[in-house]
Length: 278
Image (cartoon, rainbow, N blue to C red):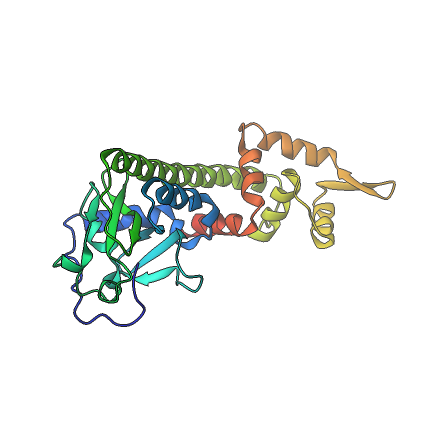
């Protein structure tokens, strides 16, 4: 949480000793660049319900910015990307335990922040999102304009929420890695049967095999490579298409993963970009 204007008397937090490794862990999640608020909204909602605070947010922090993954209680025009040096949460990056400040106005670290000076934030609590390797990716936070004394049970519940969020981020990362591995296998197999395969053509084949809608241009391509055939004014998969699909199906679950990704074509584009870059 921050103010857009430049903060001259708010001192940035010291850089943690494991910052380089932490930044790599943040980058690997890929979550900063995806618009997936619906995946994380529940954490903010539950954090507010548990604590009674009017504001909750969660985000990851890289070397320059805090990326808000979701929030509940912010003004609608609040930016999702905030300079790191202006945030409260930068002070939680070297911690694995909660940072709880009951009165920001009397705290030496935070009293000069504009949001504190203006009385917008008096209470603040940050629960670090820590990976299984011990790196703090970001925080799950609550705040309010009045002092709050969290109970042991409330703290325990918020810590549990932040652990669940860390687990979700790691699961998503593992899923994307596995999906990328599977796509590489698919590329290798299709290349054995289809000449001059490029990314757009590969996407067309994958969309067809995973039951996605294809347009007329894509149908024409599939006809040219004999994956589909026209019969009685209808298009249907050809014998060659069935053979190719059968070859891909040797790896169980691949097409299911592709179908899940293909529901959002940007996800598929991102995976292809990652494969090209590696």
